[in-house]
Length: 70
Image 1 (cartoon, rainbow, N blue to C red):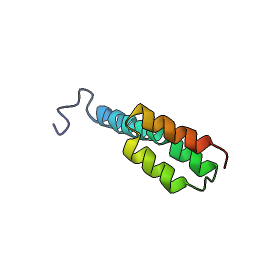
Image 2: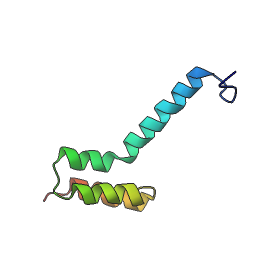
Image 3: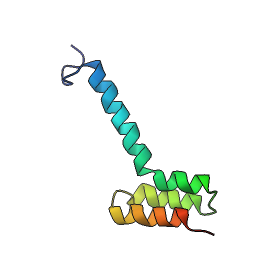
Image 4: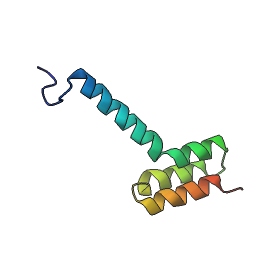
């Protein structure tokens, strides 16, 4: 019983991994937008998103900065 702490066994582990990847994708939406728009401040937006994205205010600032026209 390797996965005794997951109610659904290996399916629970796969579900947890999918949730972590999905959460990370949502967390880094501002960075992905800045990358797609080829923002000149991509590194700064990424660092702001990485360090302050956990707060709603930091995430919104990164998002606004990512969609801002240079």
